[in-house]
Image (cartoon, rainbow, N blue to C red; front, side):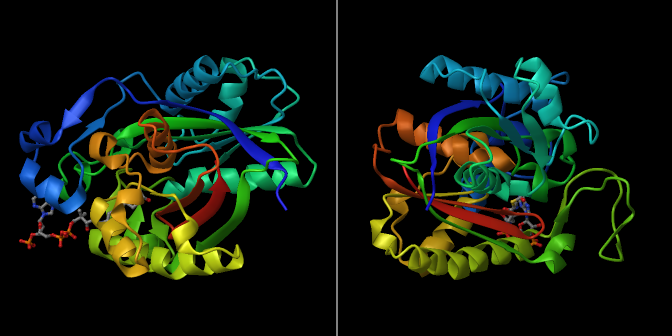
Amino acid sequence: RSKARITAIGTYTPSKKLTNFDLEKIVDTSDEWIVQRTGIRERRIADENEFTSDICVAAVKDMVQHHGVKLDDVDYLIVATTTPDTPLPSVASQLQAKLNLPSSLGAIDISAACAGFVQGLHLANALITSGLHRKVLVIGADTLSKVTDYTDRTTCILFGDGAGAVLVEYDDANPSFLYSSTSTEGKAAIHLYYSGIANKLLDKDIITNGKIVQNGREIFKMAVNTLVNEIPKLIEKAGMSLSDVNWFVPHSANIRIIEAACDRLHFPMERVLFSGEFYGNTSSATIPLALKMGMEQNKIKKGDILLLSGFGGGFVHSSTLIRW
Ligand code: ACO
């Protein structure tokens, strides 16, 4: 049984907008095609001098401003990102300095693509429930624009930049976490990557320009099948029914992935929160962005049951059922 509660949330997106109409001027595409195939209308793009650590700081400041929480006793920091400022050192270690967090805390980056935020929550819950830590800051943040090829119309229409931060604290009486699950299909890694220091991935030669390469159709199928296979198992293990879920908050990759999964799961789209329309696919930030939107629109109420599902390049997946 969990002993951890989500007590605060904050988000940030850069001010610069990149609309579908802007993209029409860059690649051979149209607003109509993008909206119909993805549900995305616009996304936010970080400045030349704005990096993942900067948008993390802004999301944490938003959290502090809205919830008045104190960070001087945070004892662990998890940053989920696939676009760290530098591979070494971690974004988390930079944030300890930038946010003036206690030097006694543990600070790590985790790399789990668009499942990163939910994986971070999963770990935070485990660290607190085990008794090892009491106050964990979890941030999902990505600046995918830095690794997007703006000559490739099949990928550049999808991605945007954003960050979300939550505080997870010890609370034995009112824990948030009901049940979590994770899964990985490593052999699908070749379908979505950007290169680092290697020229091979699972023994296959890869494109080494440091920009996202994607087999969209394969990722689409993997995403739908993973949600359809994993969610019923999670719900059953939690001793619940899908109809108990007030809000489904899947990774906002593409509205059609979510529609296809909801259709097969018989879950109504009216109870889905999607941040992709105005922010695109912000990888590990789509779920906190959708949560914040759901709160601001008075959709999410205290006590609601939420199902968060992250999935992405790897192919990795992580879902968690929480009571808000
Ligand atoms: N504008 C206009 N036409 C386009 C565009 C575009 N931006 N992109 C592709 N097309 C064309 C293709 O060239 C193709 O033309 P053809 O029939 O003449 O060959 C046609 O549209 C259909 O292409 P498909 O690839 O079949 O299009 P699809 O409906 O699959 O949509 C898309 C493509 C949007 C990329 C979709 O496959 C998708 O969203 N996949 C999942 C991607 C995703 O979610 N990735 C992130 C995962 S999470 C993470 O880890 C980051």
